[in-house]
Length: 516
Ligand SMILES: *Cc1c(COP(=O)(O)O)cnc(C)c1O
Image (tube, rainbow, N blue to C red):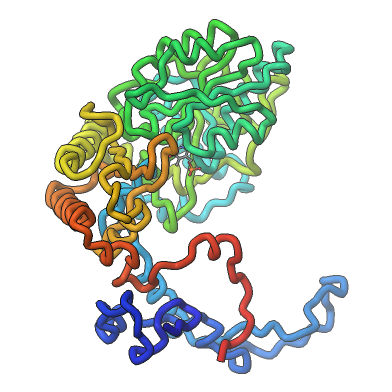
């Protein structure tokens, strides 16, 4: 089949092979026209807007000004707008359908958050503005900080990290600084469960630590005995995710924290799954020394294609002196941003400014509109929804860790597909034809062909049932040998099965002229 540069068949007559048979091209084009690149629509010879001629006599660019034509494609305002609106329609989004991407907590992003973030006084401030002109912004950050500290029963917070992975780096840098202060730089090992998100070992390795894996037990969790068997003087920290990436609460966490503290090491908690326990269990009560919270997961700020992350890190009392600057301090009624401290303990500054302020506004808006009762209810509903989906799918899908209840997400493996010739990837692609974003696949690594489903609290029973009905239908079709529905899927999406490895390894980043 001949494809144009966008991967769609270039004309209906040319569609010959099986995978295109189901497509009614005309219908597909009605709402999803094949969208060319701006360079294909536009033309560098014309101008999309009226600009006065300019005559540069005095350049301040020291001879670095462009000599050749810039050759940007010019388009009119409606042409440009249509281009981006059409592209946006090609995207799966939380606004268009259930997005059960395990571990990512793709919950609804309330529009109230957006309104708050667009208030003049929040939207039009600059990080270099004099502090006395942004007292309201500081107060908002302080209020968010207080909520997060109280919810978690931790001692202090660094708001500046800009994602979960960045938060991990922040927490582990504080741990490293604490060891350094005690003259224990020889501690060079970080324990990380085999089920951990890839950012955990990556963070440890980035800071020069050796990563030692911890095996999961047959229930999918970590035994304190297993941890103790790995302990020695060179251990700097353990990085634990709780609830873990199998959607299970680590029941030994308090004993693990004690064992780790007994040898002078620290417990870092990856708090990406805090959605399941917020308002119910407090990390500070579990012996955790540092933990990031993904505001973009737990507290509903848009992520993925929708916006930047924010990964504030909470610290125990012991680690607080080593936390980064800046932080907010209140003296009587005066709020200040502490940007310099002389105790020599803080590991310093992690980012140029103060963090993702727009995300602080959105998360605080989410928190205040829910209240503590609403936040607790959200966690309960997230867990209830996950267990509902688990109960409905269990008969056809295979759960690696048996019949135990799950927290906010459900882990299946590919055992139920054995002998069908269909892989987890094929199954996920068939879900796209049903209008769903696929679940997380092949993660965590400790089960074969993992499928990790997180419905979140924002799905209704109707939408969960619709999802479960379709998932059951797909599982039955797979087992009945209807392999065609899977191996070439997606058949109804704007793009067919693409070679993702090739796309990642050899991305076409440069416009190289029209193909024909
Ligand atoms: C999302 C996630 C991370 C990383 O967070 P980012 O904000 O994507 O950097 C780390 N651990 C787990 C378990 C996650 O789900």
